[in-house]
Image (cartoon, rainbow, N blue to C red; front, side, top):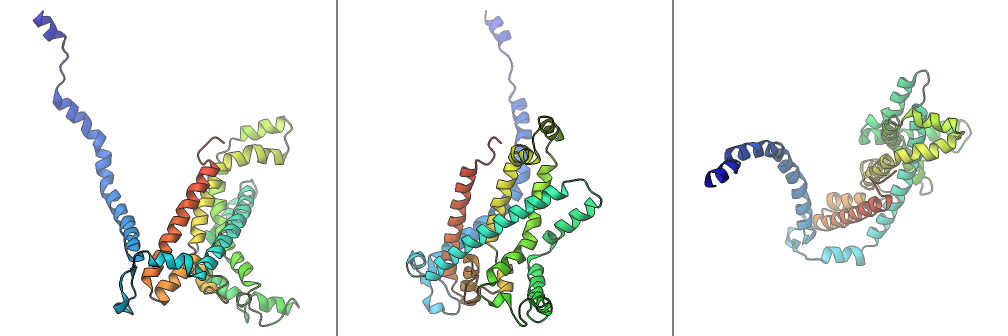
Length: 310
């Protein structure tokens, strides 16, 4: 009996279990250095900004530096009308820019997805503005909007408008002018992402829809758009975050003017920290902007059901 029980009991050498566990840990060990670096580059700035948001910190006035508690946040919500003005303009800027970029980007993607002569060259021309840096884009449009040598000069030569008109200095034209400048660079972003997703749509679906007598619009509405759902949600979210944080283009084009009419919240933060040297208050503004973006992104993903059924 004892011998039979001993024979029936399967051996389980501990060495084999340890050896089999090592390959499972290897991928985590390999990515640990990169994960620690990313954590350091992300966590340290966030914690640093949070630390300074609780302090009065101005290098030009060191005698006023010290712990402020929640005073900076109280000042934001109760004693700073510029915060609310810039937040409203930021929301307007993001809504208009992302909406127009999505509309024109979708249209461009549908066009360059068709088969025509010179399609490769057409795609290269459509996507080329996205390869241009933000500062260079701003410099290009500053020259185009120059009142002496830019678009308005040529329009005046044709009898449209007057000489010496600057669209970037007029409160009634500065917003559309800035929107057009940013559209030139932002539309290709949507076109690239949407075109990549369009090419994965099976042609059999369109052929079956044609056999059933579906029109081009019905094919677009019931086949193309549902397939592009996740790509559109992700691209609009990414672009909304980037447009909210857009500083270089507006700073170069208008500097937030005229009369502060094109000052976004990030541009206000930049001016508060760099120009006014009030890093404590600028840090508090940054924390508020971070919470706003986090909340809006979470709500948007929940409402849009990103990753769900198409």
